[in-house]
Length: 110
Image (cartoon, rainbow, N blue to C red; front, side):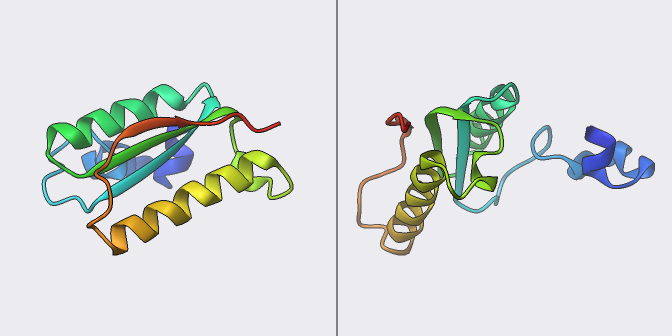
């Protein structure tokens, strides 16, 4: 999976081929949206924590009960929740006088 993500074998040795694990100073404000029922969720949480250690404004949202790849399924309620989360974050980021970043879990969608 990592080799496919990096794109070519040589890129595997490049520390910046993957998010995290290097200096993240100057990284822009970031929204991470994770699926509650995703085996890769731990890496999203770890990246959010790493961004916070570098004082990067980060919002880490977990869509309750959502499976991996839910943003690829526009017919699902999880997709709607994820898109509302993203839209809300963009609105708050464009108007920074609203409430500060937090880590939350969004409500369950069936």
